[in-house]
Length: 212
Image (cartoon, rainbow, N blue to C red; front, top):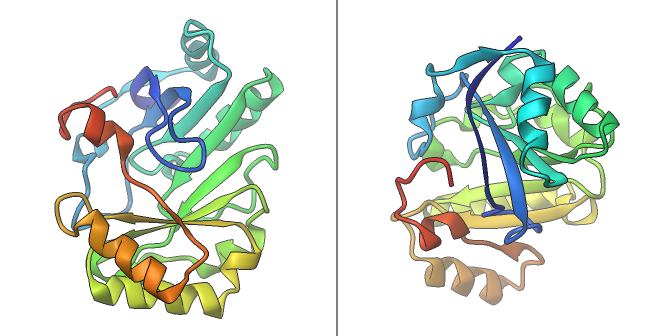
């Protein structure tokens, strides 16, 4: 059994697959409390569902791209079995994880989007850097930038762990805190080989809208 906050069909708002139709499975619970969190409603609220029932619900949308998100999905160890089952069923599975819990046991077919927490998140000390050893070329590492200090720190981490040669690196802004144009300016000035992204769903819909 897994506690599920919501299952919904929308477009992928972030990552290199932004814009693609996706079924989102949002799991309840999170072990982090980021200063800019936009999904606090997933901390506790949810419904207990068996893995078979979750997969049945996902099938209804007739969409092969599925993202497991949260909260923090890896808080519930059964999420590993859910991802494996979805892969076995022929779905293209993505996982969005906050980077504080181990990813080494995740099915190799899952595309991992690993969020390394910057200083302004107030959760930087929770980053589990050993996870970088298990990142695959088709995975992505994300930095959510809220300040110049965040940006400078992210640059240092990219060099320290040779991230640009491991996988795609994503930079996005803390929504409403840093102007996108300013982050783009920094990236271009420093000639960083990172992928800038916006949270597309917050542009299409009102930023606090759920289920999109």
